[in-house]
Length: 254
Image 1 (cartoon, rainbow, N blue to C red):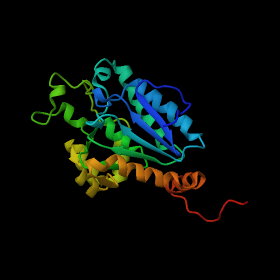
Image 2: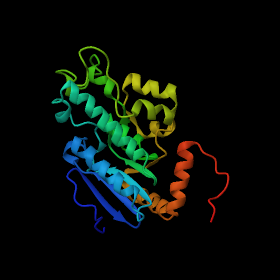
Image 3: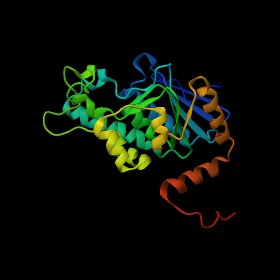
Image 4: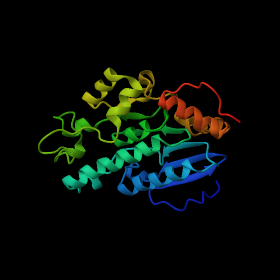
């Protein structure tokens, strides 16, 4: 694929091809877990893409075979002071909100694990398509649960659970999940911290479509190319109208 002209990134990969921006989280050895560097690089990409007339759609995906994104990098989380913990929440929320406001469509192509902050990232896209091997959920509440629901990675304590008060998904998931699937279904997933498969995610309306893993790249490419074939101004206009609940009364004057 041709060079983007955007420069090199440390934790993500960006390629432009036929009006599609292929944006890949590129830490497969860490299940593409998110770090402050990733957040700042995503903010840079979405600022640039928003003004790039050669981009009609962004496809967000994860490198490797195992995960779209496993959420926040625990090595980062465990070292945070209480003050830094507040700031990381703000950084993630601002980053995902910037992605959500990108003028052109953003599609999250989810395979493998998309949990915690990884699902919150996908929810900031306009819609999600999934491989049939996807496992998704906002699992944060389980990090301080009693056995057998508490994962091994926090057996020695949950770094995100304050001494007093509570902890909940902090990067927009508690807002975007109910918007996507309804309050009652969202509450079930949030109260239990359940990790669900792609077929249940499809039934709930969390994802728009499920593709066989062996065909995932090809099917996502077909979808991206179809969207990219549309007029960029019309894509931008339709996204603005739908997102803000506007009606289309009269065309712009010529």
